[in-house]
Image (tube, rainbow, N blue to C red; front, side):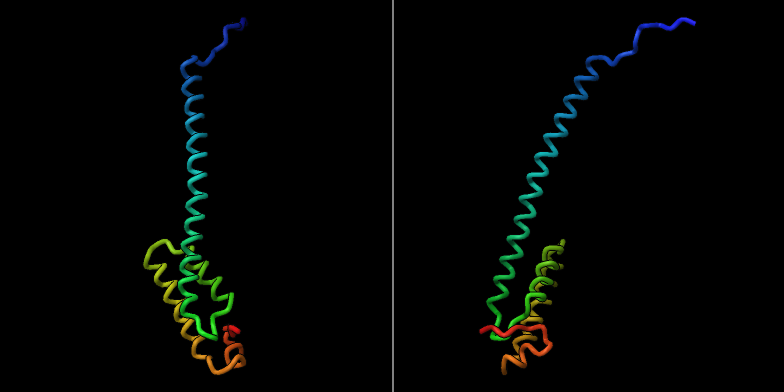
Length: 118
């Protein structure tokens, strides 16, 4: 048995095309990774803006931090305008519920999840 010493190699064209494809892939990953970071930041800013808008309607007795965190989580997770409106509506209902406890600090904070604003 004699073995041929001649090796089977890849043509130089295939190597060049593979290298170019790899470079393009790396560039695309860098571009989309940067854009994803900016998108997440913009979504966070929109949520903060909505929360500040909602705080305008607070009275002496306002929703506690857990309700604000729930609103923030729901609003961030909303994938449509309808879902965002639902999150806002739910939080407005919570604000209105807390406004009903305007008699005193004790009635506001007695197991309602609301907080008295000094």
